[in-house]
Amino acid sequence: MDTFKRWISIGLCAVAGLAPFTAAAQDYPTKPVRIIAPFPAGSGPDTNAREIAAELTKILGQSFFVENRPGASNIIGTEVAAKALADGYSLYIGTTSSLSVVPHLYSKLPFKAEKDFAPVSLLGVLNTGLIANPALPANDARSLIAALKAKPDSVTVATAGIGSYSHLSAVWFNSSAGVATNLVPYNSTSPYTDLMAGQVQAMFDGLPAAAGGIRAGRLKLLAITGTKRHPSFPDVPTFAEAGLPDYAPIAWQGILAPAGTPKPILDKLSAAMQKACQSEELAKKWRDYGGELRCNTPAEFAAFISADRQMWGKVIKQANIKLD
Image 1 (tube, rainbow, N blue to C red):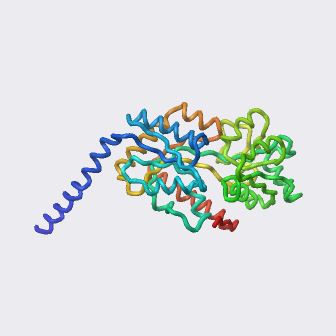
Image 2 (cartoon, rainbow, N blue to C red; image 1 turned 45 degrees about the vertical axis):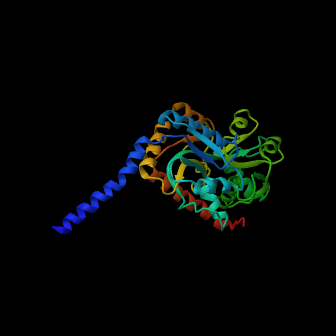
Image 3 (tube, rainbow, N blue to C red; image 1 turned 120 degrees about the vertical axis):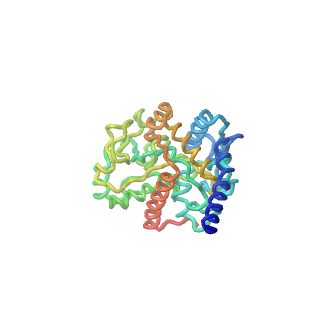
């Protein structure tokens, strides 16, 4: 009987210990919440962060705002977020680059991507396109691959610098297709001006920066990632249709909190994110530039990041790329 009473007492203490967190989650948020963005104001991810902040403000009745901490391949802002108080009032908008790619490129980082963050919800994914100057003879990925196999290095492919998303996507394509392209890094300027002018011939990238040029005919889209054709580009075949079913880079963005943030708060934020994802206006914005608004639970987002990080790790290891 004494043992039974002791276990009852332990159980009651455990429940009592959870009470403050439950109460805090019910009242949360009681003051403004910052979303730390590791990229500059005006960038694509910054715009998406501000849009979701506005939605969360409406849903939860408290101000959500974006705090930009750009620099050093997203490392500066990511460190700030990782070391912030785990009280639900500092969140972080993570990306493919900051949490899936950068950890494989640098052996020493001031944060641990897999341990220092608690996933809240995915925000959306951006399919990767093979974007080309209209003068490029190939009109789809299959014909480009054939041309490159006949004449290796005959196509110049712009990248945003070594280790960038566009560079690694190009490296992955070369490996997957068994071809060689002439990679041209742009470290401080956007390659799109030169791409539209024909100074370089192609680029692998998410579609937000290119969608306008594609629709205006200044650029053409040869292929897009995804398991099926994108509704905004229904005439563009997928890479799988071009014979590359395993070529699947996508650029994602999502909301996370510092590790140790109480689970009830994470769950409340995730529920608010999923409600925000019901906004047809927001969903249309993502579709228009080749993406998909997609929210989920903390557990689902954690599994998504883990799989994505492993996928990019294989690409980077195979290419033997290190930046330190």
